[in-house]
Every structure is written in C-alpha cells, then in structure tokens.
Length: 251
Length: 108
Image (cartoon, rainbow over all chains, first blue to last red; front, side, top):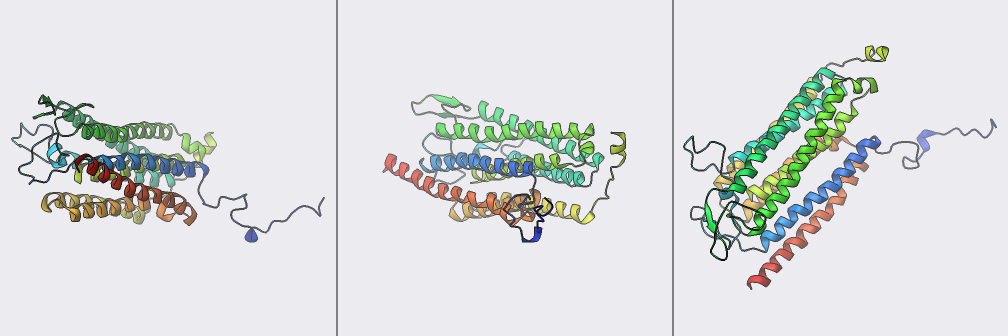
C-alpha cells in the first residue's frame, strides 16, 4: 500500500485537470458572474428591441425648438423627460434631463459606497461594512423614489396630443400615449420597469447583507465574501442604468 | 463561539485603495457631466450618437473593470464573461438592419 500512495507534483499538474480552482474565484462568485452574463443578454435584448422599433418608425427631422408631440414620428427624449418635482413652483418651465441626471448620479454614488463596503469587508471591519451598506441602501431607495415620481409624471402627463383618429390623449398607457407612437411608452415601461425591479431586488439583497453583517454572521464565518457577491449584482444594476440612460434618454 | 469572535482582527484601511475608488468615482461622474454638456451643445446627428456610445462604453469599462474587479481577475474568467457578449454586437447589427427594413416596407 505504501508503494501505491501517489505523490502528486502540483507544479506539473494541468490547472484544468481538477482539484484546484483555475479561475481563482469561489463557486458562488463564479455563479454570480454567469448569472450576470445571462442578465446582460436579457437587458441587451430589451435595448436592441428599442433600437429595432425606433428604426422602424419615422424620425423627427425638424428643429428641436419647433418640436411637437405627434403619433407620426418618434419623440425627442429631451422633450419628453423635462420635468422636475416642484419646478413650476420655482418658476422653471422646462428642465430637460436634469431629473434623470440626478438619478444617474445617485446610482453611481451608491455603487461607490458599495465598493467601499466590499473593501471594508475584506479587512473584516464590521462597523465600516454596516456604515457603507446603509449608505448603499439609502441610495437604492432614493433612486426607486425618483423612479416612482418619474413614472407617475409620465403616466399622468402634462400636455395633450392627438391620436390617429383625432381623439385627445393626456399621459401614457400601454395602448396609447401623448408623447408619440404607442410602442414608445410600452418600451419605457418595460425597460425602466425591468431595471427598477432589479434595483428593488438589489436593495432587498443589500438589506439582507447589512442585517447579516450586523448580527455577526460574517464574523463567525470568518470572511465577508457575501458582501462581494451582492456587490457584483449591485454594480451590474448601475452598469445597466448607464446603458439605459444613454439609449433611452440621450440618443 | 465567543472564542471565534475574539480572534477577529480588523486590518487598517489601505489609503491608496480607497483613493483609487474615489478616483474612479470622479471619472464616472466626470464622464456623465460631459454627456450632459454634449446633450445641450451638439446638434443631433451620427457624430453625437457615436460620441454618446463611446462615452457609455468608457463608463462601462470603469464599472466592470474596477468596481466589479473583473480587470484584476484571471484571464480565463475575464474571457468567459467578455467573449459571449460578442453575440450582442451581432444582434445589434441584424436588428437595426431589420428595423430599417420594416421602415422601408411601411413607408417605401
């Protein structure tokens, strides 16, 4: 028996022949990456659908100053998203993209606080993890609040426009909207809604992590890798918003 | 359990690492600010669209590489995440082409 006991020379072993982790990442972290890859495909499909439907509608070719909402062509986003809470009280007529810009900054900042939480977790610093997780949760909730206001404003509408048969429409629903072709609002609800759902589940996951850090589960476990995994998800949500912001609001 | 908790050693914060995080945050905010300036100064057109897409990809690079730490992972992990995304580029081209074809069919 002693003669058959194999002595394995690790240096000569192929990294892919088993027994070691060739990607130097834990199972959980790898699976989070592959989940995010599949989620990236889902969001890509939604945004590409936006491109396909937009390209199949006529584009507005006049000047921005003369732009009016019409069912005939795709709307200019600066003219659709120009509202800001309380702007009429302040005497401001239109603030194009300001609100959505603030939302973008909030999400980027909450991503930064998440990196700081991950960094604190790597140092086993429970107090710091709790502090930065709380800021991240706050950022997530603020973003969701902003989105709720934006949806409400989009649905209720402000100006009126005519539909194909000459009826007056205010606001937006899935079948028709004041801003342009019916698909415009449908895509808005689908894409920002699906992203908002991700933000919501992200906030829930962040809260679970905050709670688990608080009661000392990670200290007992001896590592804070869970913070890192949920951090990956949270950064992904921010990443998707960067693309939604460009393709829905800027272009 | 008590013994385990008392063994935990909190390491001091690495100033350089934290500085780097804030630097990346500054870059991301800076690019977003530039996007705003472009949105109101340059007229609509292909150049503007491509500028926006380039800035978006630049931002995405910083988020994925630094915040998600992919830039510092093993090459095999990097490639298994990035290469499948080539399919997305393919899908963009065929679907935009398809969109224009639908437009021509309805209006041509």
